Length: 339
Ligand code: TXA
Ligand code: MG
Image (cartoon, rainbow, N blue to C red; front, side, top):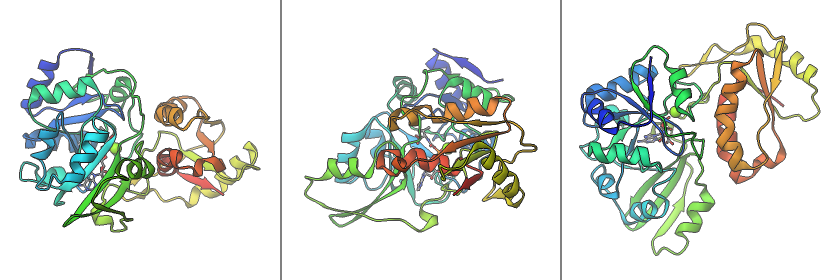
C-alpha cells in the first residue's frame, strides 16, 4: 500500500536516488516521479502506471538553469516564456540534450520541460539536485489525481511514498507547447490544451522582437500520448450535446448504442456499463476555472457511487477558450457522446 506523508523530503530524495518512484503534488495534478538519472526509476514509472513506452514523460525542474541543461536549444523565446509563466502549468517542448534518455522521451528528439508551482515539488527537486520525470499519478488511460488520496486509491498494491500537498489548485494537466526555432523565427504549436491558453501566450509575446507563428501540429509522431481516449473514470461517462434530451431518453439512447462501442482504442480500455439502472448527472461550477479544478474529483466521486453511468450536459458557452482544456479532457474521458 502506498503511504501518504506530509513531511520527510530527505526520505523522498533517498528513495528517488535508489531508483524508487514517489508521488508528489503539483499545481496541476499529482505526479508519479522518478529521477531522470535513474533508469530503474524511469522504468518503474512506466511499469507502475502500466503505461506503454510510446508515451513520453514530462521532466520537472526547480530552476531555469536546470531546464537549460536538458535541451540543446534554450533559445530566447523559451527563456522569455519560462520567465513569464514559470513556475506554472506550461510545458515547453524543445530539442533534448544527452542528459535526457530516449526512455523518457519515447525515442523523440525533443523533451517536455516544466517548473511546477508547488513548494513541496520544488523542494523535492531542489534537494535531489536533478530533474524529475513525472507523468500524472494514475493508471494509464484513467482519471488523473488531484489529491494524495486519489493517488493512493489508484495504486492500492504498490508500495511508494506519496507527498500530500493538499488539493491541486489548477486541477488539469499543463499546456504542452512545442517551440521550433528557425533562425530568429519561431513556430509554436499547442500539443495539449491547459490552463495557459493561446490568448495568454499571444498576449505575453505581443511585444517581442522575434517573429512568432502559431501552427497546428497534425503529425501524431510529434505529439504522442494524445490518444482519442484518456482520463476515463471507472464508470462510463456520457456527454450530452442535445439539451432537449430527458434522462430517460439518454438512458434509451445509451442502451441502444453501447453494444457498438469498441473494447479498446489505442490501448486504452473503453469503459462500458454491465447494466444500466441508475444514472447520475455530473454538474460542474459555472466558472471555467472552478470547473477545471473540480472536474477530476467530481468524476471520481460519481464513479464511486452506486450509479452505473455518469452523464454531463454540454452547453454552448463551453466553446469559449477558457473552457477548452476542460472540454478536451471530458471528450477524451467519455465513452459516448450523444448529439
Ligand atoms: O501538468 C502536467 O503536465 C502533469 C504534472 C504531473 O506535471 N504531468 C502530465 O504528464 O500530465 P502525463 O505523462 O500525464 O502527460 C505527458 C504528455 C504526454 O502524453 C505527451 O502528450 C506530452 O505530455 N509530451 C511529453 N513529452 C513530449 C514531447 N517530447 N513531445 C511531445 N509531447 C510530449
Ligand atoms: Mg496523464
